[in-house]
Image 1 (spheres, rainbow, N blue to C red):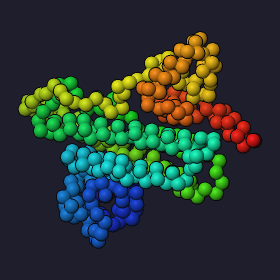
Image 2 (cartoon, helix red, strand yellow):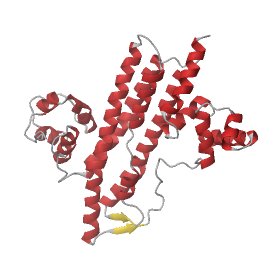
Image 3 (cartoon, rainbow, N blue to C red):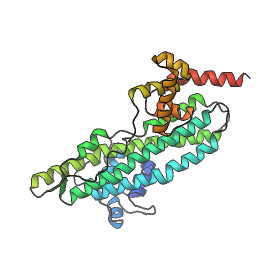
Image 4 (cartoon, rainbow, N blue to C red):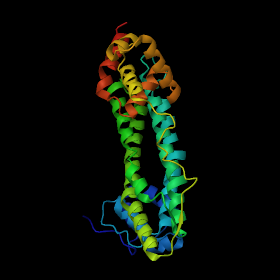
Length: 327
């Protein structure tokens, strides 16, 4: 493993060696234009905890890193700024470029399906990050003030925390496999944007898993063993942002899988040994719970929630596309 960046290194040398750190600087509130100042000098000038900064940049660069001396307030502000970047700048910018690149009015419906897939994904990212902002970080701030929660600890978050970049890879695969446009330079550019965003989100989640969570665990242990902790029951704490008030039953999931595979109500009824009326009722319930009323939108939901795979719908999309282009 390459040697770690140090506080005595020139900041400009570090950025020149690894330009992917430029967004990291922004999330720490460090502007460019640092001339020949060292990492330590820049951090002091911008009131950024040096140990936390070095832990993040070394980890993000694949170098040796240390979580000793991590400042949780500094790290949480960094993570909040990353959330703001994704939700208010990067993901909306990709959507604008996606709208330019795909034809949402096409007869095959693939362009619209791609956009709906993306919008569903962004909604999931928003729930994920808002849960962290409004619940996890609030819990940590309370813990730093000397209060432990009897019903919640960072292990609850750790047990449910899942990477959020993987579904962008699915979107990329959908576009590459099923959107047959020639000479679409805009689409090529937005694909590169999606790939970069996928990598950035994956790195962000790894920082949370490998730096944030261990640092919080250590702080919890130190507070609990100090004998100075107060305790709360966690009343008013929000639930995980990924949970739904309305969830699909197993039978509804079976019906949804059949819909995603292109089966008619009669075919679904025959396959699941139901009446056509019962299938229609299930479909109304599914649309009501998910607030998704188009078949394309339901396919996107099924893919995004791993009820079906791209392979499952390959034949349907390929057949529909071939039929329309043979007319």
